[in-house]
Length: 72
Image 1 (cartoon, one colour):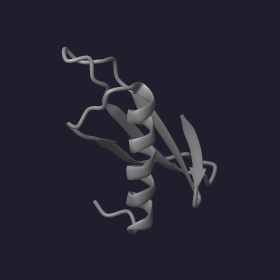
Image 2 (tube, one colour):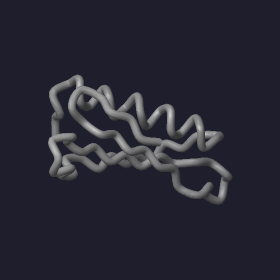
Image 3 (tube, one colour):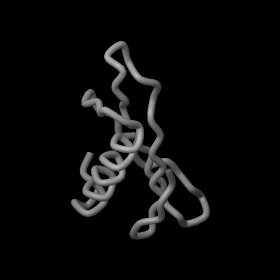
Image 4 (cartoon, one colour):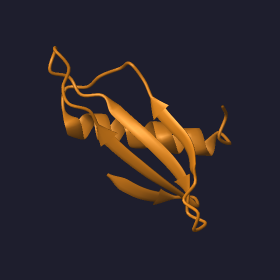
């Protein structure tokens, strides 16, 4: 899933289900200024029942990170 948000490109992918058949999102955030430089790679240990749920949560977390002023 890719979305443009406040001058950024958010790309959310989901990994294959783990041994518990749960999905984990990986989020990459880039600027849309033409360079598309990667500014943040978000990953976490929480997992979700479906790929769609993992993507949705990944998108929400990425937007929150941008809204908070891109903390480290």
